[in-house]
Image 1: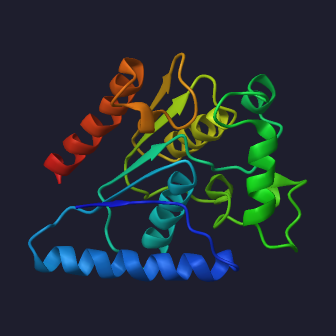
Image 2: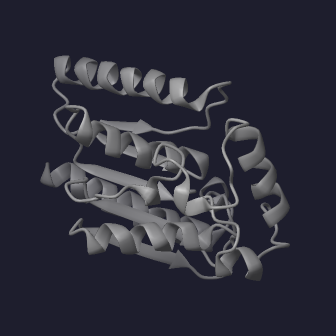
Length: 205
């Protein structure tokens, strides 16, 4: 069973995480009743952020046990100074100004974004002190995406913590490429890589 992350608009993200965590546990319980033993998380962009955070909370708060996390171009750092932010400041689909606006709308007003390393892990999962024991991951990023290095950085941190991770940076593609998989061959190929990794994880159990 794969639980798909999406963007959640909530006046208090701290409360939102609790709501999502409850739904994750409930979905896992329902899946178990129907004989689905392997639970994974999958999300893109903000949904990738949510999936990464949920994987950490599941590890720390007693489950559910997850066998895999599939993260496409996830937001993980909140750092607007990463090289990909500079290189793709005016990128198509998503640019640096839009990323900054999303952060402003999403974060509580009392949180200072000028020091991204101090953002709480429930907002920037890359800031978690201990990433060991998390489920294996596939992280897909896009060459011309301002948050490309968010995914690359998180993949590096997971690997350093001993978590099996595959990172694929899709050349020529932009943020949101999964949505174009039915019409853009390169996007279809990049999406298929992630889905193949997910299928393999489900088959392994």
